[in-house]
Image (cartoon, rainbow, N blue to C red):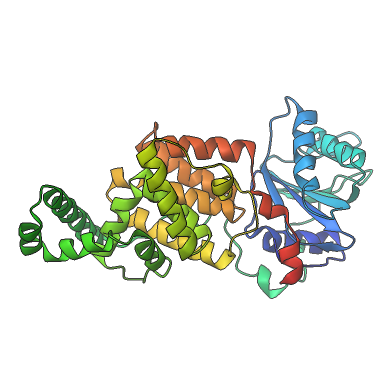
Length: 375
């Protein structure tokens, strides 16, 4: 949430929301926290049912309230329903939920900048005594900054895995089979035989001797990734002890990866668990990780998931889910976790991430504006 904008009208503000959110929302309520006349981003929430609007409103406003120095909020509903005509005008969809959110915001002493509704037939203001629909093209014609151009997909856009083609994925699959054969023979004391019969796989097995160095190379994974190096990474991410090291290192740096690996190995041998404080980043605590590094790691995780045989995708997909959440994209996380569940419903890390995102939709650092102010 680093984009700072100003809008002089409801139509112009609606034209800016996709840039603030990073996508064009659908079936959503978008809450935009303000400090004075400045806003740093937008929080998207799935449209709720109307069973308990007050409980939803309390949770939504509490989320906005976590953003530092917020003194007011704007609300936009994106929905598929149309406004209902009445004798006295129109009734906008989700009015009950919106009223509950506005009341909850006022109870928290937050000012209301605007409350808007975007439907298939037009847009309108909830705050008007007699709401009227305005053409959608007035949104698109509103002046928009360069950052807002080209944002056409909704909150799920960008989650499709890259397509490397059958030939490339088969190469990685064969490399993984050969690598596992080499590792098996090495454990049986037959290294010379393994090196002679599978030299490339043997070299890949040597990469595994320095796990942090291999994970660091993945942050700069080339567009045409080498099959045996990818096989080594996929092999590691299928094992929780190394998958967690990748998460800590990609959220930090090489040194933190080395420390995480040492901690994992120590506690694995002793049968104990690492301290909660040392792994706080997993649950979104502490300072914000380097955003460019998270993006690079996400590209790597998505590539490895696309290249891996189906049953070996859960590790990279789960990491893609965590990295998306760390970047403030819980909708993307949910899409990756759906793929994890489809492959292995009992995958424990996937279950853990689902619960984490349910209870903590965004990490703590997503609400810290100090980094935004320094940018």
